[in-house]
Image (cartoon, rainbow, N blue to C red):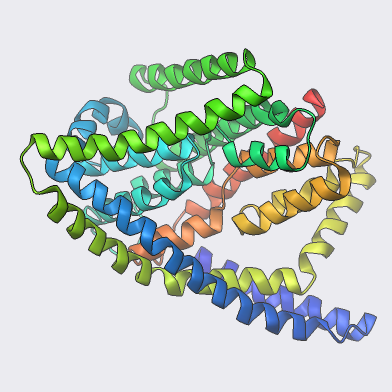
Length: 409
């Protein structure tokens, strides 16, 4: 129901703003622009879905090999002590645990192309446990929040964009991004746990979260010992090697179990095609609503209102010019990327606004896109507290990014 109200609000607010611009400002181009955006974003949503088909087929095929080779079940058994605390409604050793772990790992390493298919597989496995097929379960919501909080250890794409824009030190945003996205993830876990009455103060979770924190601190320390060029090379090399290692490792495991890896891959790849087709309506619905909202000028009016409010309170308004990236990120990844590039182009990659826009881009993920794709893939209509927890995690990431930008830059 929450997604229903949000979807309606995008269109209603866009129409009101468009009408106000037409009547008060005489802007006759606003409604044609909104209609153009409707058709353009509908086409883009279809192209995104079709573009996902290849990646879904590849990774679901690889996952099918891993399932038949027993690797996914092996991961599930290894992780069950932690995941039974964080996802108490998933039975111990269930294959969904392994898929969740692989999706989270792919997100942390910035492997977006691998993360989405793995996440969709995890959703399908959790849906098998769902007694109310149209309503999101607690594990689904926790999993979605972990995705929307966007925990990323190696933000390769952002560092690359900064290098392309001529930043003197492309990697200077690396540590702030890592801290901001960690804050967003931690807040997301805490808020969702409060909703679901999960006790986070047990020995297993404390040790697990502490271990992850120590690992991230070690990563930060290690990258701080390298120069900018070496950081870029190591980041790209590590992610590529790990990606290839997963593919080859699954194939070798399948061969060792004497299964027909080719047939297993084909069976999984077929699921990828059907999944890509199934999510088209959900993507079209949300991307069109977001496109109309932007084209109407509602986003610009919102930014002006925020700037006025911040100034009226007496706070520094230097961060307001970077807010388009923050406000766009939960709605559209490509839109937020465009806002980030625009900020670096207009203000400079080494400016406060340019750097902060990069922090916004790296601190959270595309909440509504993830909700539409993941819930749409298993036909979930009632999202319960997923939107609230996801947006609170986003807000925590945004606030942390602003604070860190003032501290570091």
